[in-house]
Image (spheres, rainbow, N blue to C red):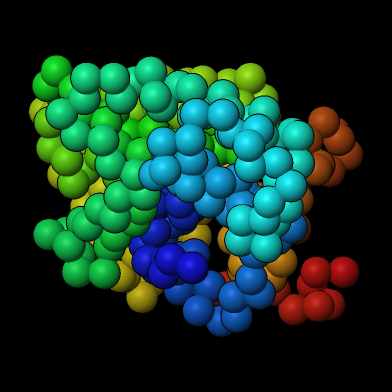
Length: 253
C-alpha cells in the first residue's frame, strides 16, 4: 500500500481550510480504511491493472480480486467507463503516466502524492482522478487535490475527475501561470499555517468530513451547535465551549 504524506493531496481540502487539524490528528491513531475506502482501493487497483496491461474489456476481470476486493458487475461497469475515457484521452499522447508519484518537495520535503493518470498531449497536461464513491459528487472546479498533483507539472493542463457511479465527469482548466499563483498565494501559506503551533481551527462541512479529530473538536462542536439552533428565536446564542482544542465527554453530552 502506498504511503501517505501528512500534508497529503487527498486531505488537502481539510488541512488547507483548517491548518490546526494537522496538530489535532496527531492525537489519534490511524484506524485504517473504511469499507467504502477499501472498495475504492480495489477499483483503483483494477483500473491500474487494466491500463498497465492494455486490457480494454474490464468484464474479463469479473470475479477476480484486487486488494482483497472481489470484482462485481457494478465495479466492472464503473471502471469500464473510466478506462474508456482514459484510452480516448491518451490517443496520440506524448506522455501517458499511470499511478504517477508527484513531489512538492520544493515547498516542503515531505509533500508528495500519487495521481491516478496523467496525460500530456498537444501542450496540455491532464490530471485524471478516479472517484469510486457514489455518495458525494466531486467537482473538478478548483479541486485542491487535482491542483496539488498538477503543481509538479507546471504547464498548461486540465484537471478531470471521473466518477462513474454517479455519472459524473467534471473538468476544470487553468493555465500554468494561474497554477503558479495558486501555489504562491494559497498553497504555500496554507502549508506554513499548519506548522504554526497556534494554527486556527476552522471547521467546514467538506473539510471536517474525514478528520480523525472531529468527534472531540471544540470548534466543530460550536459550528454544529450554531447550525442546529438556527431558526429558533428563543435561543440567543449557541453555548461556548472553552477548552482550546478538545471537548470533554461532559461537554459533548
